[in-house]
Image (cartoon, rainbow, N blue to C red; front, side, top):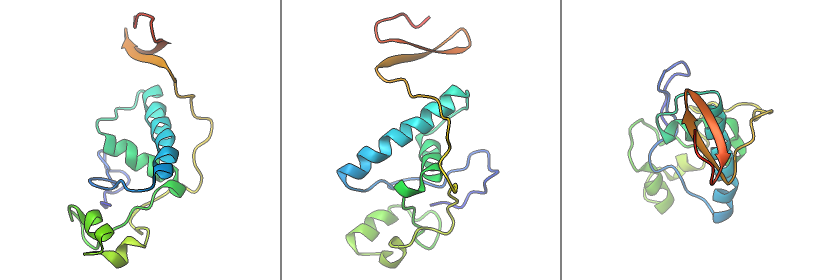
Length: 135
């Protein structure tokens, strides 16, 4: 977890080797990640990096994330040390107080196009059948 202010134009709070969990946990997280990704696409928000999407996904869906702060910033590979029991083991059990979650997930989000082709045509986002032309 980083401690970028909320008004930072390139705010990242979840970064690096931060993904761990059971198979079921991944299957429950991925639809929320892609929902967040599609929500931003549908409002033409510049994404730039998957870390921004993961940060926002965790912010929206706190039941599916457990961000931890190893005690200082830029502690690369801290999670691997915590999981292996070599370092940061006490911090690993605590959700970072540096991370700001929403109280409730957003509602009324656009439906994620499944088995469809998403493209950008003449300044607009288009969603077509898998075998239709993009423009």
